Figure: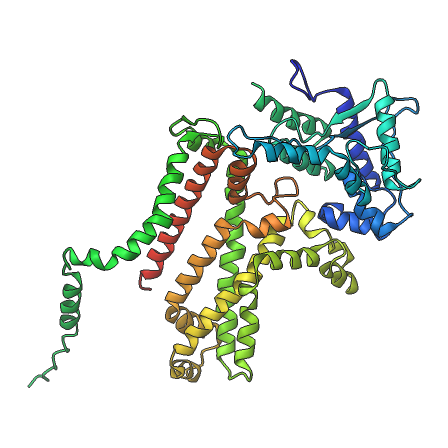
Length: 209
Length: 309
């Protein structure tokens, strides 16, 4: 969903995705009691060898690489059809703002320059995080989460119809709460895929009327 | 000759005289005495409350100029279905944070008072422990206990109750009760300590006399403990009900209102609207509404507690 006119969450694709997610739960693809496990406990259980796949993002590269060593990989969620364009939800970074009233505009600019600079990229890479811009002198060991993430990123960039879709909790200030609560209800069978779509759409409409 | 009945001693007179003296106005000098406390109280309690009330009449995102909207925020509090559900959840929590601890507290403290127990001080400390542990620690401990592979489920599996096991905090039907029981555990300690202190103050001959007359534990509770502990019960009810209505930390650290919206409470929404959604006015309106509810509940308890049986 973007600010464009007629933007809607109510699409056949999203409905199919909601139905698929529900089917995965019903088939037992998720761990028993998944709804009672917090985020940090979840990736720690995964790192301890509990589960085969973990749906998450590159922000966990550091922790997972450190705990699992070479025993962990990273790949993009494949499309429904094998020849389908690759796409993924994601965001390059957090938005930063400089207040017009600040007494320290120069320092703020320097901070932004540091964040996007080479030194920061090196530090991020050293700690198995993913810099937004990878300088030439920064390399990730082959097969590491960092290298695999960059491969995935390049694949998304070269994908003609696909690419990166902004995170679903970003369109409105309350969308995170709405989507996460509705997802839990959808997965637990409290609401149907249709209701899920409508709930998300209502949040969007409330901010765009 | 008819027997001369001695006149009953006039006990009312001295008391009435005392009351009259108490009611006599101190004049303006009285305000001077309370002035220091009043100044501090106004600065840290009354002024922020008045400010919050003012904010609740605005539509304000915290940054750009505010707009006066009158009672619109309050109308939303009443009409918002989710918010109404939040208040109902808080009411359910009152049962677990307040009624159960008070009932259990009265039962257990009466039972403990029937016999001399060796190491009484030790037990009292242990019982009070939950009430002094930081809520953050309480929440994280219980998260482990309630986890899908936590100690509660392990224990249930050990005794063959596999069909009862569930992700306690992730189950739509039981999550609110599970959170409520954490509150029971926390506030039972508070109730016990106050009740035990109250019972120790009572002369033991009352219990002895009751026992000679053949009173059992429940008669003792009904006719001695509860009437004698009236003020303690009022205090514990007030504290725990306020605790239930304003609970935030426990929920934020265990379920964050989930699964879905099963454990959403007003205080969580106050926080969310003020600090995440930038809806200061709406947030303030919920806060004021919650404060009024708390005030009414406290007044009702105090009123009922003062009435003689």
